[in-house]
Image (cartoon, rainbow, N blue to C red; front, top):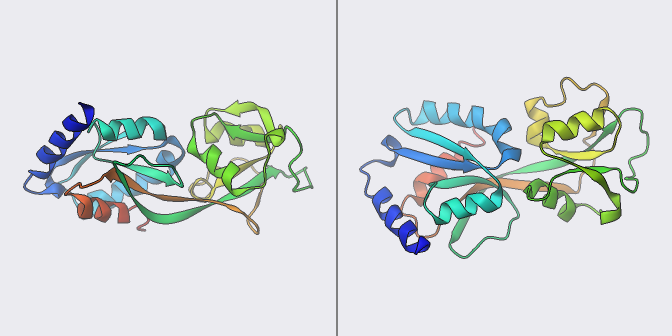
Amino acid sequence: AISVLAEMNVLVSTSKLDFFESEIAIGVIPTISTYILPNFLSNITQSYPKLKVSFKEDTSENLLKQLDQAKIDFAIFAFPYEMPEFIESFQVFADPIYFIQHKNRKSKAIDNGSLLMLEQGHCLRSHILQNNEISTKHISNFSCTSISTLVAMVDTNIGVSFLPRMAIDFGILSHYPNINIDLKSTKAKRDIGVIYRKNNQQEENIKKLAALLKAG
C-alpha cells in the first residue's frame, strides 16, 4: 500500500508545470548536512530562485523509508550503501576520509580500544570500517552522537578517529589546534550524491540540482 501511495504521489509531482518553480523536500544525512547545505542552498537560490526547498535531516535508513512513502522528493546521500530495488542513485563527487589524532600522539597505529566512532546507524561509521584495516578490537567503548563531539574527544587525547574532507574544509578543526590530520595517506573515502525513486520523471531535474552540490 505504501509503494502504491508513493507512485501516486510521484505522478502528482510530475504533473507540475515546472519543477524549478515548485516546492520540494530534500532529505539529507547528518554527517553531510552541516558542511554542504549552506553552499548548496545558496547555489539553488542563484540558479533556480523560484524553487522552494525544505530539508529533512535523518539517518540513511529513515530517509529510505521517507522516499518509499513519498515524504521527500530525493535525498543527499553517502555511498557505498546497499540500496533497495526501488531506489536509483547518482554520485557526484568523492569525499576522502582522513585519520586524525592529538598532536602529542606520535604513532599512526591505532591502539586497541582507541578508535572513536559515531553511533551505530551513521553510515560514516560503516564507510570507515569498509575502507580501513580495522577490527572491532580497535573500536573504543565510547561512541559519539555527532562529528563535533567526536572531534572534541580527540582534542582531549581520549582517542583517535577519522574525518571526512568536507568537514575539514568547512573548518571543523579551526578551534582545535591540538589535532593533527594525516593528509598524505588515506585508504578511506565515501562518495556523495543523491538517491530517488526509480522511474521518477523528474530524474534529469534532480541531477541538475545534484550537480550544485559541488559547484563553487
